Image (cartoon, rainbow, N blue to C red):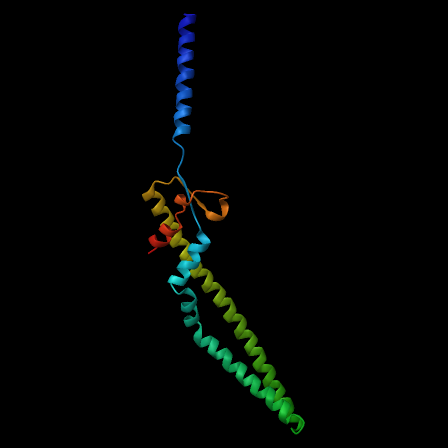
Length: 169
């Protein structure tokens, strides 16, 4: 009976060690993607900056118009300030202050809206890149995909950046 237990134990040890060897042998396939580079190329491909500029063109032009009116009033104050009556000078200063206040308010709102829309467009690109990474990983049989910034050294054959960029629709 003891020999049978010894034989069973020995066979169990051999079986489990062969399973660990097999698991180590079947290492996971790991690739990497330069997501920063992918974001830059896709933003350029989709003309994100141009799209946002077009979206906010009217508001930017409005701010430039306010700047122009402010400059005109400042020039008038410099040129005619000493010749103006006290009431006219005060009126001009109030108009300049109102324009400046209006300008600051609209500029801040524009900045905030541009930041928000930029983040929305960036998020759209991130989602597209994630989907493309998943598709490429599944198609190529990769188990793990890392960001290139997290990789110290890897074989160039495991760089999936160009495949991911071309996979983005």
